Amino acid sequence: MPIHTRLANAVVVGLLLVGGFGCTSVRVSSYVDPAYREATPPKRVVVLADLQDLAWRQSVERATAEELSRAGLEALLALEVAPPTRTWTQESLLEHLKAQGFEALVHVQLLTQGQRLESVPIETVTRVYEKGRPVQEIRTQTQGLEARQYAGLGLRLYALPGGNVLWMGSAFAQNHFSLSGFFTSPDYEQRYALRAAARRLARELGGLLRQSR
Image (cartoon, rainbow, N blue to C red):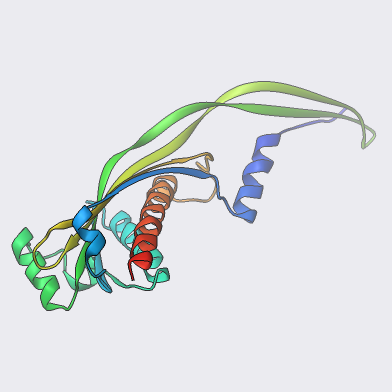
């Protein structure tokens, strides 16, 4: 009498992989300097993510720049115009970017990052077979723990070359899925949360710049 058991939540993860996610919530807050409301919005900006991991930095800079480009700005990655192999002071960096024709610097900073354990339902399905045909199905409901990655980013818009802060915002993103061990890199979920926060912040800033024109 063969018995086959499977975990139903594995099917859910498979559907996430095939159908895409959209399973991250993001909370955003922002503040505009009153003097900036009367200023001419920048058209050419550079995005600098203050992250030690180069892969994460490139991922966040690219996500931010893509969203700003959708808002009609020319947005480039700092990795492409200010090599990280060089030593930059704040003054030398701002002067270098101004000389490259940039009107503003979009600075992204990591505020917080980690994971939370959440209780999730797990359904075990056991099928009993006789002579190759299923004769009984037993469903068992249990609770398990899964790690949910979260990340918080801060973003500031600096005018060049003076360095005055024109706009600032923060975003907190939390994933509502877990793909550990399902054909993804170890840091995939962390980067997904970071990119979600970066995109949401850039969308907020891009909308403001679009309205100011």
